[in-house]
Structures are given as C-alpha cells and as structure tokens.
Length: 483
Ligand code: ADP
Image (cartoon, rainbow, N blue to C red; front, side, top):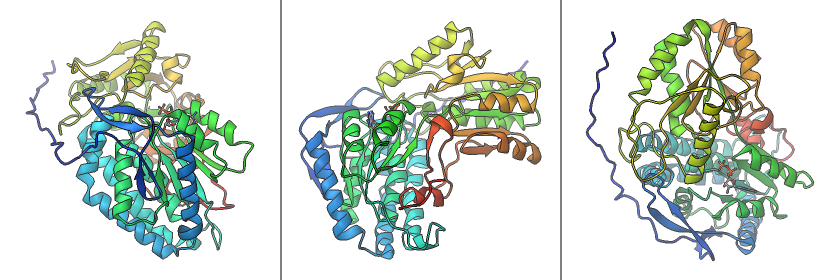
C-alpha cells in the first residue's frame, strides 16, 4: 500500500503595501490621465473586494485616443529613428523590472492568479518582450521583411483578462518597435496593471500619444474595432468575439491579427517518462487556473499507460494548493470572475450529464470569492462537449488512444489549432507527431513555455497571424505577409 506524506505549509503572504490603488481611474490619452464619464468597479476575485472604479470609454473617449495616437504617429514616432525608438523600449523594460513587485502584486489582486505566477512568469516575460523588441527597433531592415519596412500607423489593441500585463506587452512592444502608435483597451475585469503601465510610459518620458489606454467593456472594444482612424486591429480573446471582429474589418483596409481560443491535445505516448509527464500535465492545465488559451485541456493517453498516469496524476493533484493568491505557496488561485465561474460550472455539469466521470482532490475552498477545484474527467469521448469546447478553467478531459496514428487523428479532430504537447522519449516519434499536428505551437516534453523570440498563434479557429519573434513584427509592418 502506498502511503502519502503530507506537509503543512505555514502561510507566506505577500504584502500588498507596495501598491497604491486609486479609488477611481480615468483614461490615458495623449500622455495624460483624463477623467472618464461613467464608471464600473473592478474587484479582487479572491475576496470580492472592490479595488477601484474604472472608466467606461464611449465614442468621444475613443475618438480622443485615436486622434492623440494619429498625432503622435505623424509628428514624432514615425519620424524618429529606430535607434531612438529602441531607447524608449529599453527604458520601459527596465522600469518594468524595477517595479516588478508592484506589478506582480497588482496583477494578483486584480486577476486572482497566484503571486508566484505573476512574480515569476507574467511580469518577467512582459519585461522580456520589451527588451526583445527594443533590440529590433533599429534592425528592422535586417529582419528579412523587406529592405525598407514601414509601420502601419495607428494600432487598436484589445486584450483579455488571463495575462493582463503580458498580453499588453505582446501587443504594445512589437507595435512600438515597428514605429506604430497604439490605442489599447485592457479587459474590463483586469485594467489595473495597464493603468500602472500608463504611469511607466510617463516615467519613461515616452512622447505623448504614442501609447493611449482606454478602459471599458466590449462596447468600447467595438468602438475601437470600427473606428475609421485605425489602421490595424490586434485582438486576443474568445473565438466568438474574434469572429465578430473578422466580420467588422472584412470590408475595410484594416490589417488584423486574432489570437483566439484553443483545445490543445497533450499526447502521452507509452515511452514517456511518467513522473516528468505528470508534472507537465499539471502545468499544462492548472497553470493560471486553466485560464490559458493554449492550455493542455485534452489529455490523450496511450491505453497501456493510462492507468499508471491517471493514478500518479491523481496523487499529484492531491498536493496542489488552492487558495489565497497572495500566499507564495499557492498553486491555483481564484477564477477571474463570477461569469467565468458560471461558464466552468455549466460545462462541467455537461460533462457529468454526458456520462464522463468527474474527479477532484479534496480541497477546502475559501468561502468568499470565485473558486473551482482542479478537476479531471475520465471516460471522455470525442463527441463530448468537454472534449470539443474550450472550458477556460482548471478542468482536464482525458481520452485514450491505442496507436500513434489514432492519437494524431484525435488530436486534430477539433475546430481549434493553437497548441499541442507531445510526451515521448523517442526523438523520431516526437518529430513525426509534431509534423502531423495542426497546431501553431507544439511543445515536446514540456508545456506552457513562452519566449518573446518564438512566434505564437493558431491554425483554424484559433486565429490569424503570429505574435512574437520575427513573424510577430511582420504583423505591424506594411505589405509583409503574416505567416
Ligand atoms: P474572454 O472570453 O477572454 O472574456 P472576450 O473575447 O469576451 O474574451 O474578451 C476579450 C476582450 O475583448 C475584452 O477586452 C473585451 O472587453 C473585448 N470585447 C468583448 N466584446 C467585444 C466586441 N464585440 N468587440 C470588440 N471587443 C470586444
């Protein structure tokens, strides 16, 4: 019989004293904070505490932001040498590093993700995106994207709530490096780090209007998408909204990149190193509460190792610490919003009613805030909704396969194609599988690894274009193909 040893962890709370949250925020337009009209609350999803009141941008606010961005584009940013633009990007990157703890605490308060993740992943990667793109600013002609690459103009950028500052960095850094100016809208439930980023732009003395930030909901997003003064739309979010945006820009001259949903297959072959694989499965689906578009949410296990992997996975899941995101020991934090929690609960219930078997470790969830225990469903078939639809939560659907060909067939049987994982000790099998998989990012013996030098993006309903690397730069330059 196996005995499980448990270790009790003493609380290790991070202090929130480093951040100053104002009771109310306006928009950041033309280098200044300007008052907003209507406001809505942003809350801490772990406690339901109201953190601040956020302005809801309407037509006049978006117009003002686009005007400021155009003015900055014409009068300064497009005229400045790449070398000078690069200096500003380096400066922003360094300030982000200096203020990393402040950003991490604020991100965790507003988003609900564990402080360990915002501190060790989100914020360092956001700074890395600025460093990386700072390096490109004066070398665009050597990027293999034409001898005299030109910016597009004003970019409208709309981002989601799962990696608020990191998604901002993915959008703003390449746009600025390529010589564009931007109007960015953070998600309605996580605007605070974008507003702190606006302060960083002031601190870096970035010319007024190069970065403009308007806050609001989908209605503000739609105003940006449909604004005639914008040359490019960059969107990360749901496939549903991505389709609305694709339709809206189709009859216009706007360039567009879309980074949408996913339902990644994480494939475990029978020669995989099992213990390492179990860590990768946990990281693949429970990192950031599963609020990850490239999450490994469909686990495909080769039948002859399925029992062993599931046994070890359940043991491992019993050790996942769910709770206070501000505690440095926490592995899984709060679900970002009440609405998202309702969606996860609903799809999990569909899993039950379609006959899959649900399992969660015993864990005590806090009484306030939005929580969902790490969950796996076994006995899932390809027809089940939990095998087809993105749950965007800590819920793993487990399927099995007998032959490598069957694994590929099942992995590709999805309308999405953002990412995939392969676990095998055999290089030839890994290479073969990666060539068969219709996904933009494929990890081998690891999962959820990100790097600014590596292009990221999807096939099929997972999106258009790439972000990061040379490919990502192309999306902010005139006349260059995205792929
Ligand atoms: P999620 O499922 O991650 O909440 P959404 O696609 O709903 O994704 O939201 C991503 C971003 O898109 C948010 O900033 C949101 O405010 C914005 N958004 C929502 N609806 C629209 C729309 N119709 N047009 C433009 N932006 C939108």
